[in-house]
Length: 244
Image 1 (tube, rainbow, N blue to C red):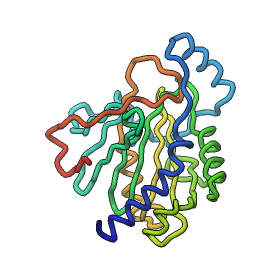
Image 2: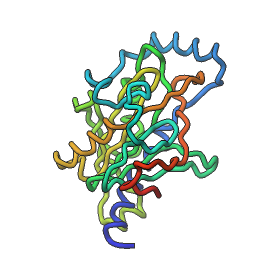
Image 3: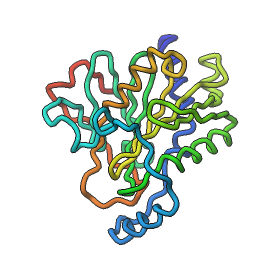
Image 4: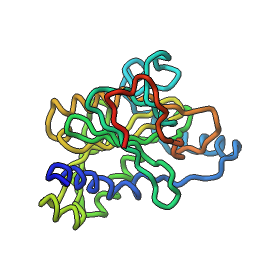
């Protein structure tokens, strides 16, 4: 493995060290009655939706808002626009073997995305931000909340696991946690690499996050359930995108 590959692997491990606890959100039964009850309850708990004012035009888009003739890499809960230099990874839960996240390597940065079911009229990001920050602090990291291009986001410095530290020679990594509340869904992203410190790389990754299309589907789902993801279906437009 090259020095660059070892460094990239270490960066990915540093971010993933908070992913299992901070991202996996408890779910309940799929009964329609329970969904309706939880939506009513969340209206008392969650704040308004958090999203850019131009989300419906500039993204992240709902499937109903996307261009139907544009080529996408279909991953189930999300669709990704292929582009030159973009490398796609699927993150699989070891026990269940289900796909739990999509990793995108681009512009010397990484972007991990996860789509979740959400209430119809209220959002999840305001509360989930607090949960992520608490989890990072419990692991010895530090966080700050800033106003980013998608609204409030978390800037974090996360301790590197012992193995990754020995490989990369660093004790911590920087990460950005972003989130957007859409129509009946919530899309969360984790940004690492150059996009945490370099404005030019950050702009490219932010545009990549904007280009994601969320496919909520029509099946009833409790708020906070991960919208199912799957292996990509080949399309004529996926040239330039490497799937690992």
